[in-house]
Length: 112
Image (cartoon, rainbow, N blue to C red; front, top):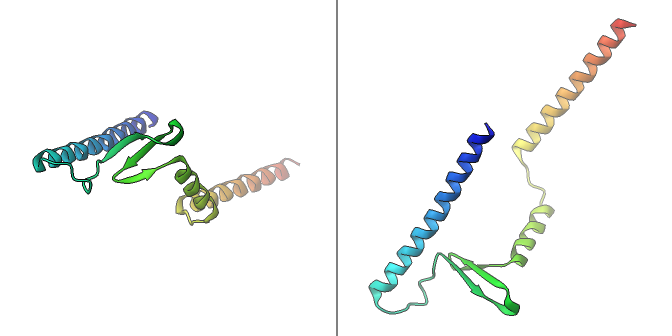
């Protein structure tokens, strides 16, 4: 089962980078077809050197920085979202625990 999920994750990752590569190739084709550089056509994925020798990444024209990622992480931690799977897992865990404890106590009472 783990191998299956690993293969699926690998295929999804390869497909994602394939889509980014295809978008970049389409952008390059649009630029060569126009014959001049149009700043409104942004690349799918670009890496540039920023301030203080830091790398800056841009995905689909939006700059991605570590600060943005950290802010989004903090925002997600502050917002208490409802996750169906975590709630269902907690409910299942609580019911299994209480059932196991009651069965243990029932067997213990039978032996006494």
